[in-house]
Image (tube, rainbow, N blue to C red; front, side, top):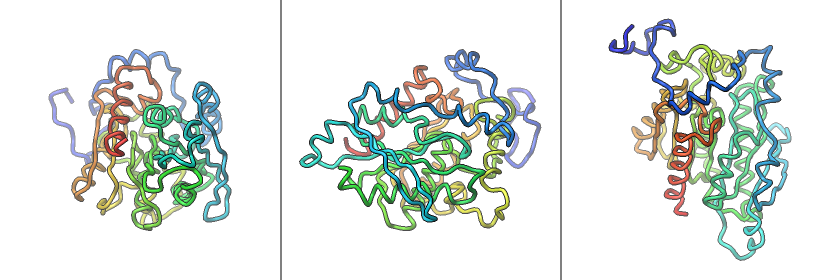
Length: 337
């Protein structure tokens, strides 16, 4: 297949080597060369990779004048979930008199099989720096230790707790943004669908950064990015299998795999972004199109040459700075901050 040949339809399966890939941003490509080879993600390597899938939160908070609260939230099955709430100290000092603040509820990435609540936390903390939002993040359980809807229900339990304790936290219960990156973006989409359908809590907006939305892993972009890479088709297959093994196909809900949702109406304003050079590109574009088709608001950005999670991996790259600024500008506009 030459560069001038048309791309194959999505239902035509070709070897990945026969499908051309969009190029990687030159600035990112230079940085990617310095990364060690990515380990194949499977049941044997997962325990080895997990310890490296997050970083201590203390360095992120060291130069910020913030307070940190550690809270325990009960999941529906009684399991205790750690929830961290980070707010600016000047907000705490004025909590009795100030206007309630907006809150970002952050759901971390890691393919639903690794990471912890502090993974990629530099992203929402940057929003706190610029917009003054309170940041909350929860330690949802991971696959394969749990399967099916447990993860999204864990995350929803945290959102419900935040809404119910908004007054003591100094946050506006009508101003909670649900946000996440990669797997966290997919979970955020599922939580927002749950919030709409259960009508117990209000979500002001959702930010889905390179979200993992479709367990079927059948898009053209998923086939383009088979083999070594930041997050490959094979890693995606392993992650979804870890979550869904043994669950009948007809029991997989749109809350777990949001791409299955037939009704995307009545969702809050939504920001979706992805890189052009990543597995999740096409499912993310399709989700934005589904929101538009349902009469909703979606701001979609596909960053030319972006690899999966590029702005978290390489925050100082030119394309990363632009992507981060774009999210902050959107939040400022949508939340009227």
